[in-house]
Image (cartoon, rainbow, N blue to C red; front, side):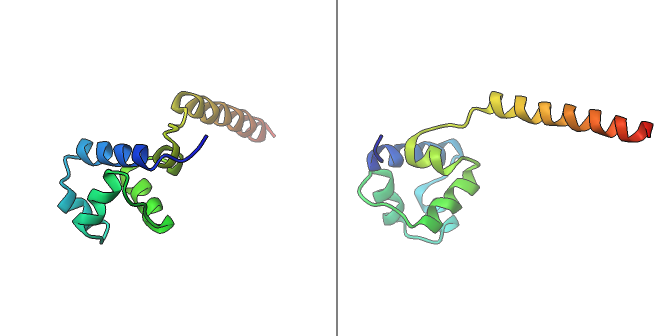
Length: 98
């Protein structure tokens, strides 16, 4: 699997549009130029690691999603969290009985 700059740009544009942002607003938020945003969205230019992380945090997505299109498995994550909560609840009950 290889990084596809054009697909990265499409995902970035989609996230921006889902937020109802213009390229100008996005440039303002990320302290870059509108031209840079446009070039990233068209797959003509990349971004720094710092900007990549900032974008991921802002849009609440993973860097894996931005770079490779891999969305996290939210259902599996939720199940793992609930399993841990259940296990910790059982441990807490045992400690309360002592």
